[in-house]
Length: 171
Length: 440
Image 1 (cartoon, each protein chain N blue to C red):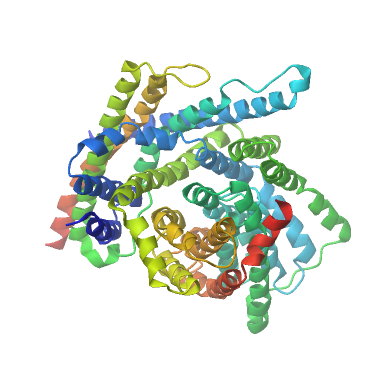
Image 2: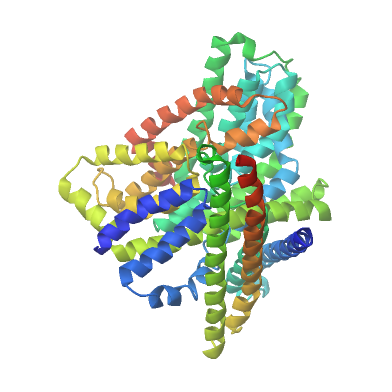
């Protein structure tokens, strides 16, 4: 059950991260096209309309989508030099507390982001140039946050499973 | 408890969380959210802010430069450009005493011109140069030490992700900061080479000899680095000339290194996936800290701590230089345990108003540019100071069987040149400013 959940989360996070990366690659192509168009104004071409806001929305989607993958790989920056002083039991307890804190904060972020999305939709806010509904961008980014909450919950499970071993070994 | 006290007390709480191995970004988020609640007395303001703050932060146009530069570095790694740079440098200076190590530093500087991250530079050049250093009889200490130090050139020589973050926090022109960083970056490379030259004379056993390369081979190797030069000129020149925004320049740079990687066969579907996943990890790591700092600094703003600190320091009439020295000392000490980006995001909102209020005999804008460069150079020392300098671990893990102690020992001469350079750049602001004055 634990391993299966881990495998599914790993797969989903990887897929989402790759999707975010492909969006980045698309932004690179878009920007290059836009600059080329701007340079060829004399020939009747121009920059891609709304290129800036597409870059902003795409980059936001990419960053949100990268979060779960980074967390699952323990990629977030921590300061480890004092870990050696704490001993095995305390470290296991800290891991659990830290995972719970992460879940609480990511849960809060996802909840507020969803309400933000509903606000954008209720007020029918649109982007500046292309007049695209802003809540679309929020919705795309929500996927990353929801999966981030899921991987955080999984890290709670992971830390809880490690507890008995840490306390048993010390006894 | 008044708001100022809450602001001050948030520091020990934040540090305690960080030392308990809570991810730095998460610790800042927690303290920021909690502190905001204490200062404003209710949850509503922070809850309302969180509806859009994460999206607004992650969709910031100036910050979108970060994933693009990271992807550019990944593509450059896969494009064989690191190998071309090292071959060229080695063929020209490899036969000198300590020359292969110097070539590694030179190649790091070249790679730094198309890569904005220190860890990526150290890792990439380590892969290329470590086997050759070993083959030529260089000691583990010198080989890993010079590459760990050389890696910091990735961030000192523009483009630089840390400078981008500083520019945003201090509301400064990125193009001017990149230009200002150029001469200090070259000085760093020269300083490291000098350190190698002295080192191999004091310890002759630490470096082997290498046959000089024939002239034809040298020119051939030099010609092979043209993509690096072209990409650098287009990216930095384009920003400077105002042809495109820094974010567009990063996209063009990523396109350039991506095309090189594609042409050299380093960017098939598998390679692209690996490049994306590596970019994903570092991007997410940076942006969680950026988001945490955004929330935490907004709380500090409400507590009025930055404004009060700046006011207090001005009223005390301390010597500006003493204040600056104290700030830099803080960075050196904290650099031993924290990463450069977290330090900058945490401290610039407090230190920058302080420094901006002091008079160093140069204008306000020049003070801001110069302070940015000095801070950049100082925080980068943290990447190579034992025991937890990240570059040391990255390079050591790639050198088969090299003991960690050898790397710690080997990097010390480079740390010494770093300290000398900090003093030099602090005492003579003109070194950082002369290029800006000439070009703008």
